[in-house]
View (tube, rainbow, N blue to C red):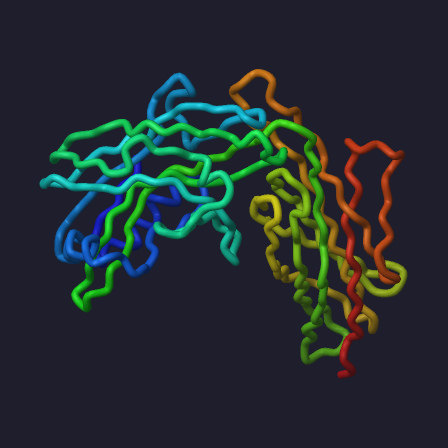
Length: 338
């Protein structure tokens, strides 16, 4: 279980707990400008309030780390969020759902309370948006997901959270929230795709002009398809004709459809051969929509593009849409004279 505490000095503990529950780091607070009524109800920063949340044990599953569903357009599913008050006094929490997105460092976050969702977060209907719990009490808050009949196939992410507003000594009101992420695959044609762009390479030499140095490779990785992808990225550097080639792997985070991240990779033992080329290759498998349910989509490779020094050169190997094409982008950098 995860816990959240309103004491400012315990804020980092709240961040860690939420990251543990959601599986990936998710921001645990969001500053906002609540209404006067909400501000008046917010506890002060010197009040200790602790609660925990997790997916409830329902017909959809038990002991789950998060929510995962596989539904057709127009489909519905019911589930619940388990909330427990671990404070010595009663607490009142607001329960809501919101769209998920990736932060600049690749962490999963959800929209702040009061910000309108347009995708999965807006498809979640929480039965009770406010719950009051006595000390030591718990409750299951039911919710229903109704997929629009015209929803596009692919993967969607959101979160269901229980939140509270906390007032700091300076009057700043912060939203503290704990929740569980929601992954939904809308059935239909899957179109996994990745692109690699904006590759640059910078060589860092040493005082000895013939001694191997290092290089920094920066690139942008974009999920242009409609499925979640967990990329495997290899970065290779070498001189003309691939001489003295060295490589490094980049542990890129999972990418939501439409998300883009700028990545930086440090490569050691780079021989100074004048012209240095960086070759970035990214591949990915599309995982099961719901690993514990029958009829889930089988893993398949992601479609990717090959990009060379003369521009984009799309290659479809053997014309098989289930086989991965390689994403490559070449960058060249001459080693600066000693």
